[in-house]
Length: 378
Ligand code: GN1
Ligand code: MG
Image 1 (cartoon, protein in one colour):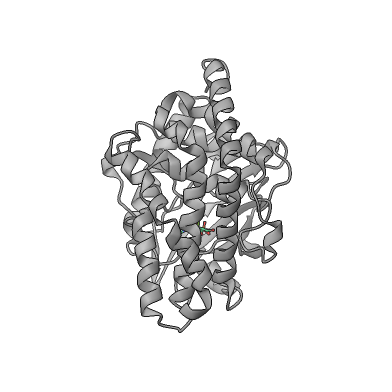
Image 2 (cartoon, protein in one colour):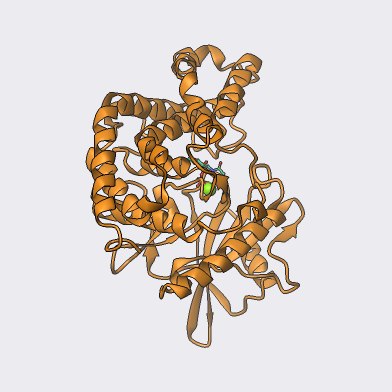
């Protein structure tokens, strides 16, 4: 935990004045460290989020911030044109007093943005309504960025969702076995390698021209959507670090992986881990209502599969990190990454079992969304 003094000093470098109050740490992200701090001045309170960017993961934070600031400017303009509220529907980053987007202090890199008041996030859902709203938000986000100049985006993590390379990295980690854990994960390794063929599917569709390269978010977990405290509707897509050229399948699949699961990503009791068809339907309906007419037939046909693909890829990444000695994801216990990997593989097995049902849901909801085009469509 960073001291209040460190965080206050960072804020001062971003030109923030007033008296610091109400300081707290956010613990949900696996990569960056996030702190919320409020400042009071002349009876007014303004809250900020201060983030320490993980530079082992994001090698060029200045280029990353350039991406984010350009994209958020663009979004703000589009949201305003559509009569939305840019202050609540996209993030607003501050510049340092000398005009920079990041503050470099020794090895560390900091950024600051305004906290959107009266908002909250979900980690696990039981109710379908908010997930439908999350689907609408991510679908809307995809549409807002449909004409964004893709070639101008810096690739913040090369090959981020290149699933075959993720599997190759797992095989390399198992062979190197630097921390001597490979013998204890033979079942998980077999599970992953038996599904190697699935890893190729999305990239093959891209190569064949059946699915296009788009501007995608690439980390669409439920906790990366802010909800409004009053309306309980999704308002703002956050965690913009991995906005890069990608596939719509990555964004749909990752959202389902996390949000349609019946247990948290690190639930140890695997009997609790499955997919909720109700939640799956809710997200699919929301997402398709916002962007069905922008998707190709192959994209729609592979939505259910993409959920399995992204869950598989995430499990492969957790297992790889376990074998590498936990150098990438933050952990709260020595076996945390193994627990996460087992959890994701259980979810994959559940999705395989339920695939016909999930595919049927996509068909039904795509037909409904197509019928509703021009009415429910924004
Ligand atoms: C990481 O930073 P966070 O917690 O939103 C990871 C995602 C994984 C996710 C698993 C840059 O996301 O790719 O899907 O953990 N982000 C990065 O929960 O690797
Ligand atoms: Mg993230």
